[in-house]
Image (tube, rainbow, N blue to C red; front, side, top):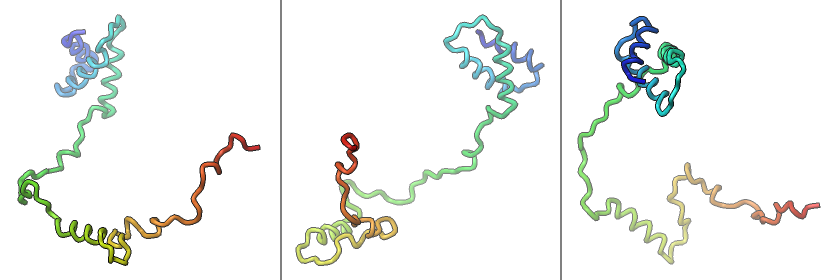
Length: 138
């Protein structure tokens, strides 16, 4: 159906009380609903359902993004190409892990809040898959 006929139907059903923005939202939704369909039925029922959606607030634009402001100004310098930024920490960790004289806990520098040592140790005996075999169970 042509846009002019849909707009005329919208105007006749709403008595011309909608703004251009509201008409365009309803027109776009009606066009999307009729896309790829051939129908001989009355279009007024579809338009009335879209007007009802408009009055329910289904076509409102989100106002959340307007309150954000993103600053794209560059304040810090980027590292040079192929430059390792935290080389001292990496070297310290590798020296500890490759050391044959180190006698402490190798993973003592992990954050205890995220990786508590109790979670790194398995309690009890591990289950074997045969414990869950129910096919031959009597």
